[in-house]
Amino acid sequence: MDIEGIDVAVIYGTAAARCSCTTTRPKVAAAAGARPQRLDARLLRLQPERLKFRRPARFHDIGECVKEARRAVRELGAVA
Image (cartoon, rainbow, N blue to C red):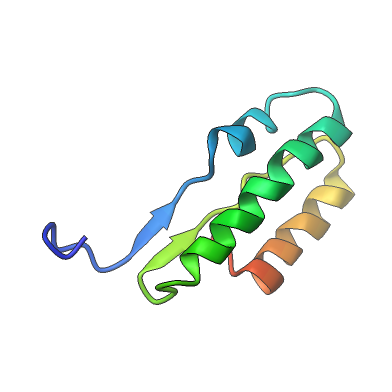
């Protein structure tokens, strides 16, 4: 990032997190996306001023989606 002159980067989730958005089974989606996202959050804490992440939305259950979005921002530090 320093060589390229990038001050801040938003990291997109892992393949498992992306796949969890495409399944039609809500419980499968939640399980597939939860662990990789927690790992991403821990890794990004190494340089929180430079590395940010986004949390993929799963719209299987809108109420759960809203709760997860809030949790991702408040507890994990997601920016999108």
